[in-house]
Amino acid sequence: MYNQSFKGNGDMNGYMFPGEHGRRQSMTIKADHAQVMETDGGMVVPAGAVIPSNDGNAVGILIESVNVTNGDAAGAVMLSGSLYTDRLPENLTQAAREALAGCFTFHTAGITRPY
Image (tube, rainbow, N blue to C red):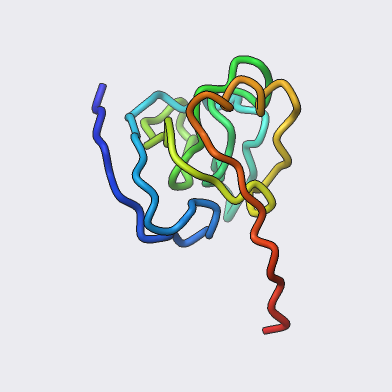
């Protein structure tokens, strides 16, 4: 498995806290993940999905969407850092929040712009 520290400068989905140091690792993303979505005839687990599941087994947050149309696939998972929880594609369950609490700091964006 690939394990690397990084300093984020924000991301396309806006759920990572800008400038935050964090740790990521390559993991197998299951094709039967609870948040899998159908897009353009394929199946995708969206960026921001809780890995492996949105419950007490949570270990991280998917950094980029992963195509699982042809089965399980590798994906980069954020294992520590800061998150804007209100920007994730699905709300964290209380069990997932507790499981991730030792490695993540949770924030809300607090500003909604009209544009």
